[in-house]
Image (cartoon, rainbow, N blue to C red; front, side):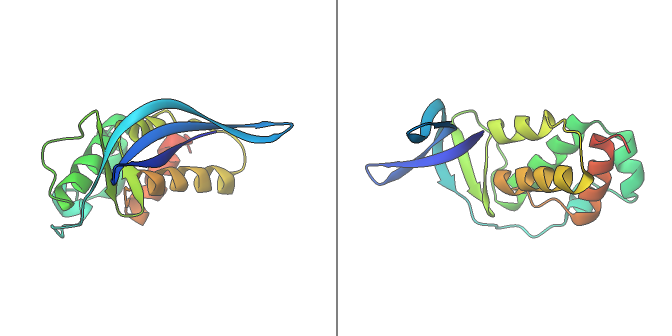
Length: 151
């Protein structure tokens, strides 16, 4: 199980991808990758997703777009709301909402492919969005969930 962990160096936060393994002596964490310097961003623009992306019919939007395109729109929307119009850089992790928006977390959502109980799958997918700092609108989440699970 991998997750983002912060480390403070000379008063500045840096993000690392950490994997936890359980051994006889207890849990052991191993740094898998450096993700970048953490930059905290407050929301400066209030615009809902539907207006930002000119979405009139959510069902049509989800049907007509790929997973990649929907995630691209969600990331652009969050970056716009937080005044970061330059796109998602490689060595920067943006602390927004309750999570950390970075390329690793976005790719993790895009690779999401789980089977099993719908409530467990839904919980895992929702947690990924929260961990990434993306506040996906509820109606869009439901339709995205259907698309991912091929409902």
